[in-house]
Image 1 (cartoon, rainbow, N blue to C red):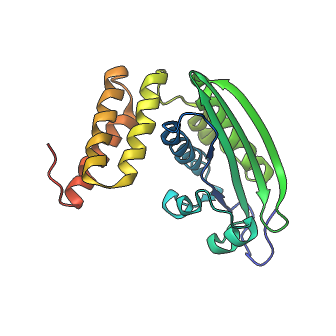
Image 2: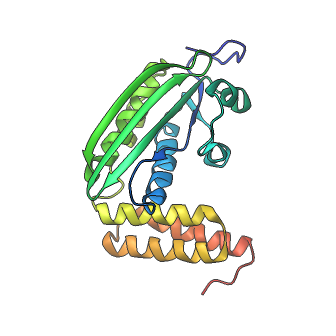
Length: 214
């Protein structure tokens, strides 16, 4: 399915993942919901036939009341993924839907009630469902990449999401908090490659913005 007027080639779909709404009672879980938004941007990005709008472009729509049709025109996308997340201890509930921005009708929707340990499987399933609805072929290597767990430690994963949140804030204080979170994630799982990348990215941004890293 393509949106009229966008003239997108077959097998090459542009989608936007809007920031997930945080339905948790604890305001601190806003960090987790923002981190999950970034993860849901990253997962379908592993599929070559999908073109996913970058985080920096979609986060401005957080808590936005704009109609999906207006957002889709601004971002030039043929589909929009939106939803909410609720976290309570080790339990998460993700409600997600893929919408046709031209009609604002649901193309696909699902509710996931899972343990935190299952979050990678949920991300993989969502990415594959999106590709299927948009008739995008998933290569075997891409499917393997999607189902691969980044870490077996839920504590390390939560710390990593917090690190990404602080990294994206781009202040000296937040960048140092990011490094702290990534380091703690590595204490939980020394093999967590993404946490090493997070540390490197944080120091790189500190240097780019000419902050003094201690």
